Image 1 (tube, rainbow over the protein chains, first blue to last red):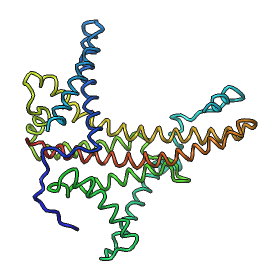
Image 2: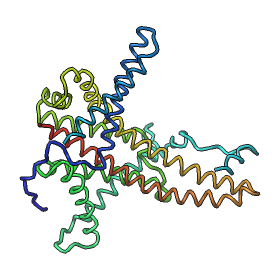
Image 3: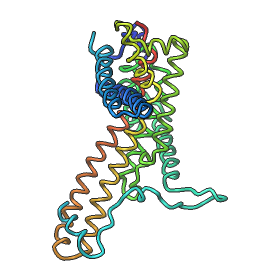
Image 4: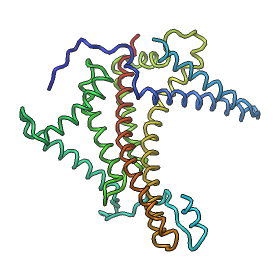
Length: 74
Length: 264
């Protein structure tokens, strides 16, 4: 077993790699499902038809912004 | 494909494979408990992996033999590529057993899909990917809570720094939903859907080729193409199977790394 030097602590976040794409997809999905779902509930409650769409758009936009916050600024 | 479509309009028709082909009849039953091929395959995979690495590690000689070399190569691939490089050299060691087991368990069970006479990917039954994803989910959350404390862990996950305060109202639910819901769901679904679709694809071409062969005439002449495509897709499946095992393990490592190192 090779001993690894203990001085290499990871930075605040692991380096960008192939897995990041999948992590980002999970974010996009949560955003659209959560805010789209909230809009859908609002639609059912108020008997309207457009909050689902607004929710989906807001969720997608917020997810993209979140990905930028987490991954874009370094 | 065109030939297949043509065929379905004549004769008794081709019965295309579907989800029912994944419900295998029990092989035998012990006291009313039915044991299926899938369960046997999972048990076999455990014996196979355990046996291989036991034999590979039994005589740890300084100049490794062929078996030991293969075992060490496999081990250090997971240890270095998925453990050290992702989680970081400070913390990765205690996660290596988990990642290592996860990778080879998924890999062997996936590759069962194209091994002659076995030819069934166990991960195409949602229960197996789901429980592995649950395990991953529990590990990265527990590890994060232990490192940061319950409140801090969720605070750090839900409130990324450098965002105007009102925006958190929109962003924080997304973050919470991601770590508690979307991550395990996508982990399980990705593996399951890839294995399910891959097996179905192979069934379509192999069974379709067989049907065309028996239906005679023009279709029989074309059937070698269906078989040929089946063979090509089998190699393609091998790629997908290895890749999916790698991605599942890679993402588990990434999630653990994220849970450990979110101090800013």
